[in-house]
Length: 314
Ligand SMILES: [Fe+2]
Image 1 (tube, rainbow, N blue to C red):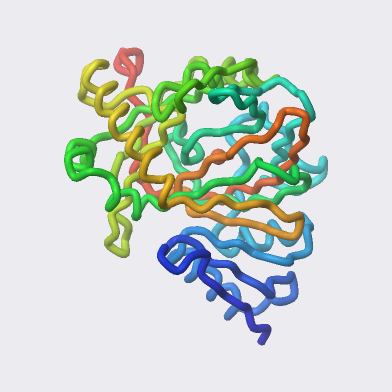
Image 2 (cartoon, helix red, strand yellow):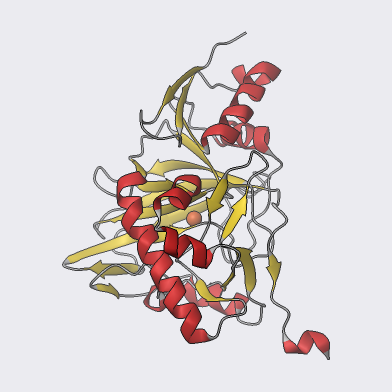
């Protein structure tokens, strides 16, 4: 049996492990697959180091956790014309549209804290990311553990958000970012695909997900995405706005001490638990290029749903 090497990402955090020795050959062994699956459940974030940077290995790692799922947006480009189901390409060309300003820094490829598919009723289990091209500086992917967030936010905010369902809608126009918005934040221009994505989702119902949920292993997870949050079920707009502002500001603040930011090497692949972990992208100087390949792993925690609209009753 091929031995995998495992190291914690940090001594004082339950989130994340670095895994060495992963090859297509090693993953044929049921013991290795089980070890990775168990570690994923326990740590929520696995960084596979010194791997062959091939889509076949990315798919093989992904399918340890679950079957691949096609990305819900048809406007997102797929990798390869013939069969790499579920591998999408997220590419930013130098000086392409889609940049923001935070204070005096202009950044492209910047993304706020979020979990994926919050605008959908089902929440994908996980995703595997690899950097085909990444700049020497910036464009790091940040991760923060919802279990640690639940414990770290103030008890007042936690008590008021627990039990609430948060409303989300697809919104890739960064100027619309309302919660967890950095100080001095301005969208310079929307990405080239933003209008197509917004048009595709214009008539879809909003989705609801619990702000706090409990894992089968007993831990509570604070799982609020500042990006695309639009309201709270049962609260009027003003009350929801106050509570979302408070909880998202706290998430941004406490994540400064809890998060891990991954600086990409071409031989890394990273998987994270989308039901537990929030992620973000630190952004890069706009004259850089970035190309990421990502798989999406199916599954559902069964706690999300679409909002019932008035027309659904007629
Ligand atoms: Fe994401």
